[in-house]
Length: 103
Image (cartoon, rainbow, N blue to C red; front, top):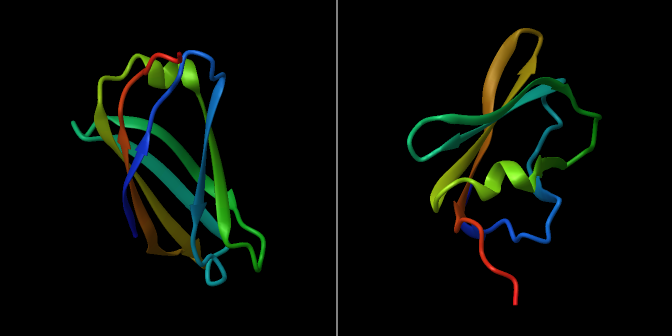
């Protein structure tokens, strides 16, 4: 689990890319859910196929979606599935600092 990584969405950004590391060798697919500190779901990707031996997921979010958010905690939870059985793979906490000005 990773916590406290600071992030922001500068006005010059089109996309914000997040690289999530994990051990996916024991699952066939994963679900990734991003929630705000308020409990509101920001994004969800279900039943994403993972290739054997891969150790990362890349998530891309439109920066415009993030710019309207106030400073908040964003938590990514990754669960995996194999043969109908789910298990937690990891939880990652990002500290979103809002939309900062680029000088």
